[in-house]
Length: 224
Image 1 (cartoon, rainbow, N blue to C red):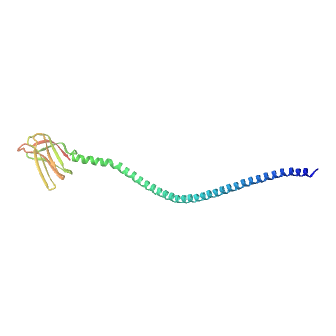
Image 2 (cartoon, rainbow, N blue to C red; image 1 turned 135 degrees about the vertical axis):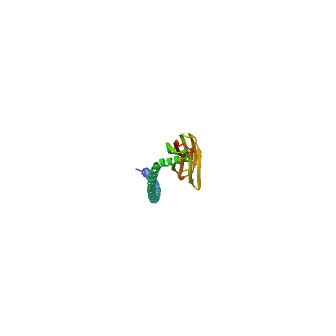
Image 3 (cartoon, one colour; image 1 turned 90 degrees about the vertical axis):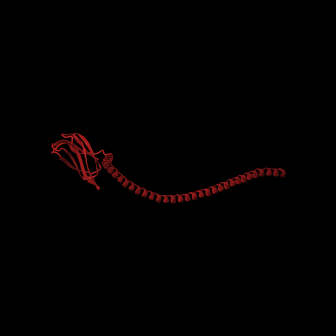
């Protein structure tokens, strides 16, 4: 074989090897780029994760501080709530006692108000003498003595009398006033006399006959 042919054969054998070497170098370069990119990615990711972890730790500490402070506030609120409940329980007891007292005294108070209203309107009355028949000799009288606790008036009713000279008479002293008055009522009639509070009011029914005795049927009512 000639030298020329041998050189051509050598050249043909070298070309495939060069191509394979370039391919391997390119692949290695791509792999390195990928590795660098992955390293950079994971480095950045690791830094971000560390930052997130640090932030979470900070937030956790802040949360713990907040919980501690709020636990103290919650304890104070619980204490205040307990005090308020004690106050409410005490006042509820007082309210119940007040309602019980009011329930027991409303009737009495209403009775007092009604009585005072009647006194103002002179709507109360006490019968001192009820259809009592009495007799006197001529020129004489029959008397009754009663107390009057309130100002008012007395009604003396002669339902019947055996003489037309029958009279009604009232005498009392009260608050410096000396009262003494007589009213003629004839054989029947009613005489009215104002009265002030007095422990002793004398009421008389009599006759002015010169000779004959008299008999009367009398009712005396005190209004106040």
